[in-house]
Image 1 (tube, rainbow, N blue to C red):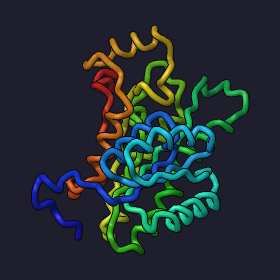
Image 2 (cartoon, rainbow, N blue to C red):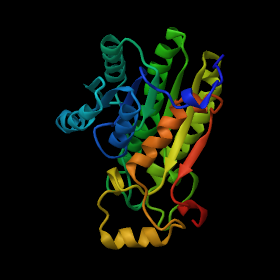
Image 3 (spheres, helix red, strand yellow):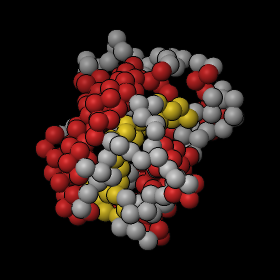
Length: 264
């Protein structure tokens, strides 16, 4: 049974924990990796772009923990198995998994030039990739016997349809990620493994880093809080969900989008 906290002193203590962050070499993923590192977590970044990952490691190095990058393609089962095994060999165990890696997919649905190829790629990465990682790391957490915390990064698009409606595959993959989170929370709860999701809106990082100033202004006007989110804010929420303070939270999808989805 996951113990409840005895005092606020230990509520947010993650020192000595080991986290995997997929897609942690940039954007929201790097923001999460930095937040974890700043809270004393040793971080393993899984990604495909190893050159970009070296820059991420330099940014993490200031926090004084152990950080390493492992090449992994979450659309390939053997790649996932090999990467998770490598993390365990290097770090000894895994306590936290952040399923952040994903790709976007847009454009008119009926007139897609390559049929459903992009749709399949988006679903395979964003949804099935999350399932692959959760299964492989979940088995490790179960066998360790210490429980664990899994945080899935989905999107506010998983619960709404944006004006224009050209992000069908992406939205469906994120809606699936939300429901996968709930199902996995039930499946893994008996092993003291908690599974939650964060559903960001427009964040000034990753996909939303450079939409152009005009787009920035329009998005900000549509949000009650009148600004885009920052990657560190997603990181802070991920830290909370992984921490002892959230020991009685599982199966939840928490939207962080400045209130944008309230008006959609």
